[in-house]
Image (cartoon, rainbow, N blue to C red; front, side):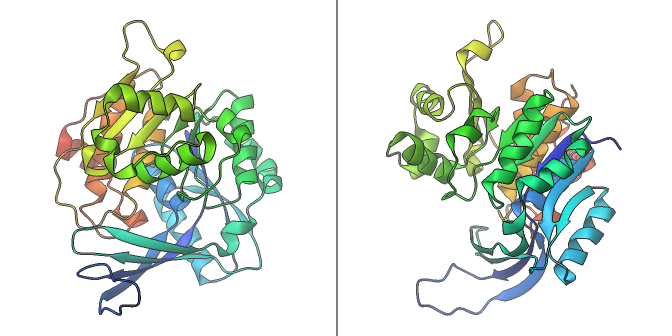
Length: 325
């Protein structure tokens, strides 16, 4: 299948402990353990593919069982790998999930830290035919900037998921970003970093729409900002100059009620599904694209895990009877 989406990002082997509640500092709890594939980049690539888009994934892998897992799973999913192989351990993540589905995550970058602009340059011809390039910041920012520069030169849309929350985003990368998709914490931290604004992440879902829109315009004046708000859905803000006649500058899309058991990877599910929606039906109304991406992310929380918890497009349609473009 020709690529509609190129994802630049990380692959991790996830080590997950499920506990009744998250431990306090210095506390030891008993939990249940499992391991599986993850990393924001791979999660988003699987989500984009399962949401119906042909997908290529640019990443860095070691020469170890974790790398073989990545290559095998990508082949099973129909994802074309654009992998740099390095003499370093494949990335890992330690994840704690409580009984309500909340999580804490610590990552060890490993090979992910070796992804560079030179590799993106070598595989740039494989971007041909794609409509969307999606990236996060678990890999070096220079690689992301190189990929977004290729996208900008070829008229592709770019989506930046500015995660982890403490990742720095240089002005040059914001300038190459068409869509930014922070969660509440990431949005708050990026506003502080780039604009010097102190915003309480815990109250963003209740922020008046006009105020939240104004904050989004400060973060990315020329692009669309989509703040993911967990169970409250998403808030999207667009620059006035880019709006079709009569379209609102901002909108909210609610999340459906689901039986969440694990929110790990829900943000990645949203990003991958949004990339797929934008690539498969670029002329479709943004509200409809966001609605399907929110539903896709919500459905992913009903399964344990990250990459392998992503729903299939058929499951999304069966559950929500989604509208077609």
